[in-house]
Image 1 (cartoon, rainbow, N blue to C red):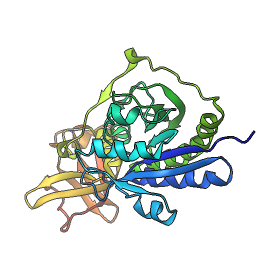
Image 2 (cartoon, one colour):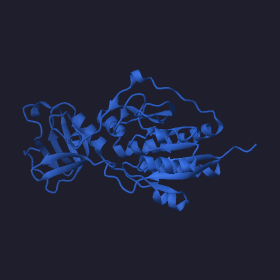
Image 3 (cartoon, helix red, strand yellow):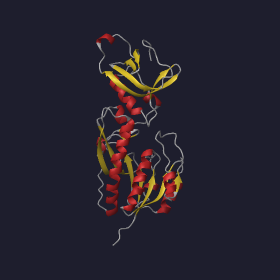
Length: 306
């Protein structure tokens, strides 16, 4: 008896979404799957890594719905007409209403790059790096009306190196997730998937970051500033320092000293200690940081304060 085709509606609007949709479309030669519709956005002021899925849907002849705020009813009606077996919602920073969650017989599969049930909420890659975590996870789960609170479908631990910047971790997440997608897609097709309930008592929620969260305060330790810079680096907006002429983006740096050398103990945080072809050395609340990639139009001078 021939296995029925798994009909998928795909929702997303970031670079990760684009890669995931490419992965699913590549499975058509191996698995009985069909992407019957794509929901995306034309633009986003919210997502620094925004990517519309329209070009990919168009070249593959897939119907596409461009979602806008307050269009949940229209979106639900459009998806319902397609009669999907499952919805994949990867890279969509908005909760889906019950009217959409209840459409597919297998449910809606979401994605969160964190070790659920821990670290639910906003900006998981940024917070993981900013907090100096040594690992996170790539987690696919069944969406419910809560935020990242549904049963886990598939999870892989992802190590974080002290040398990783946001782009490194983002790319590693993509690589690992692209290996997970074929595994759980096959399980959904043959009915061997498992739903692992989350232990809600272990959950915490990361809040939405603001511009102030990306501001370097020189009273921070060198290690904390280093973590902030790598967390906010591309594809994100960049950490910044405030100057009289405006914000200056800092893209890369390195810790010169974790603790403050004796000769600099009496110097205030933010003082420029040295400017060279290697970078700008700055005294921190504890330790010394070297700014190696930045957007200073005019370099500060030794002895000045940032």
